[in-house]
Image (cartoon, rainbow, N blue to C red; front, top):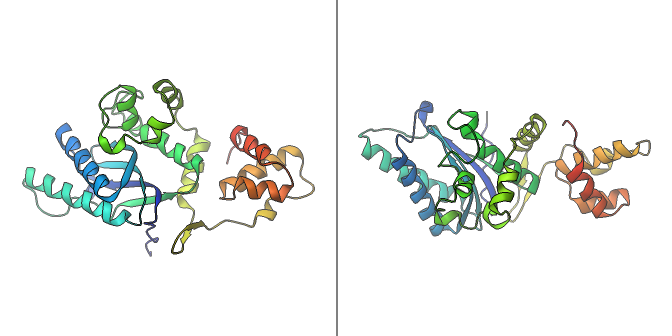
Amino acid sequence: MARRPRIDLAGYHHIVNRGVNRTNIFATSQDKDMFLAILCKSCKLHDVITHDYCLMDNHYHLLIENSKENLSLFMRQINANYAIYFNKKYKRTGHLWQGRFKSWYILQDTYLYQTIKYIEYNPIKAKMSSEIGEYPYALGSTILSKMEIVPCAKNSVMLEQYSVKELADFLDKPLSEAEIEALEEEKSKKLNKNSTDVIQERSKKLENYFSVTMNKMQRNIAMKKAYLDGYSQTSIAKELGVTSSLVSFNIKNLKFDT
């Protein structure tokens, strides 16, 4: 099966990398501290912001924002430098990583905030902690515990857009099954890139979401489905002849199983 194309363009990226054969890549807390130091050094060099991270024992999650087309270069430096450190410390040879890192380009705010929740709940899912705020190597927990924030995460959306209480409220409940399904669906969508932008390959044309026989609830559901398929609130409002504020209200407040 052909690899899906890597999108290096500026923007938000969710990144995951695992140890070869799923073996541990972090043996001690000092290893995780070293990884964060390497991460921050690479962020400074490549002008990247870390919005979230979670360092598990055999893999890690990063949510970063790059301002240049340099994702692969940025990640190559992190993975190579950490592998050198780890192999030297534990007197091992060979590959540390299980193939190339995985990454997903994030186009929508909804997807961005769902990804943060997904990352922060990894230690709980793995039974490495029992509640949000306990695990010391997830950024959200670090913020909630009022621990020192690593330099490359000081402009994280979690710090800039939430107070500690607001962040605690936001992270209080894990993603629902419907939200997880929507997140997985978003990750599986095909994206095309040109020289300056990323375009989502939509499942159908905007006008095909709506019909004159729809009742109000059916129309509202169709609005949200079109939005989740990558259409902007403005384009949906124009198609229906309604205000953008109405579309925004329905997208934010409508709950349905995807």
